[in-house]
Image (tube, rainbow, N blue to C red):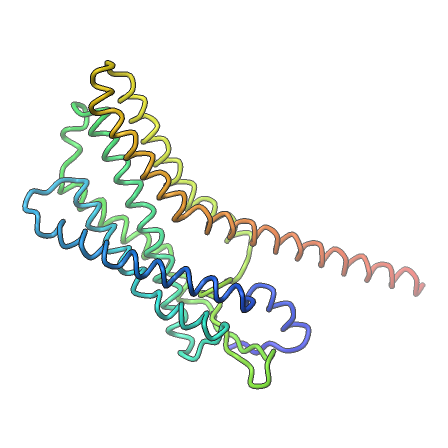
Length: 281
């Protein structure tokens, strides 16, 4: 575990430790999400498991419910962490595991939503051409491949140091960086943008084409089917944007701002060093 003091402490506080107001806000948000989402996902999973007739959409929805519930199961520990003002007493291993599972299940949820949008696209826009492709078996294989890929891709989070001791109080505190503002780098900036852009573009592209298909039908069909489907699609898109867009925008802005400040600080330090060297001649 890293120990931070003095100027190092001040530098690390800007991204590892949040203010009391931020911690209260995060804790409140997680509590509300937990209370609202847990019953809904349990009910959805129970319904999907009990249904005998299977389909690609149901396979993806089952996996989406599992990913959501796995994510929600970690929220109580995150709530405790924020309510204690960023103090993590549970050790390095659990800090790494919790951060790893957070990203694994969040991106599983994102990509399963993308899979569902693609399935709806094939079913409504290309129903005949995709009849051989849209099989529950293929959906199960695709789901297994997605889980495996994301498990491997997020594995580096388990290998890097994530806790540090910050001596900013009389007794000090241990910060788990994976639970609030983790390490920043240009690689993190690119990976965040790419990981979110792929499902975002897929979902937007699929549902826009579905809407175009629905509204290109006759007036009669639009009145009985198109309007209802349109409302449902708009609801799905709003849910996706509200659930995932704020986090990724704030993370992108934060990492970009931190890197900009770091580059500026290095440039200032080099300029000061060169100036001192020139004046000493």
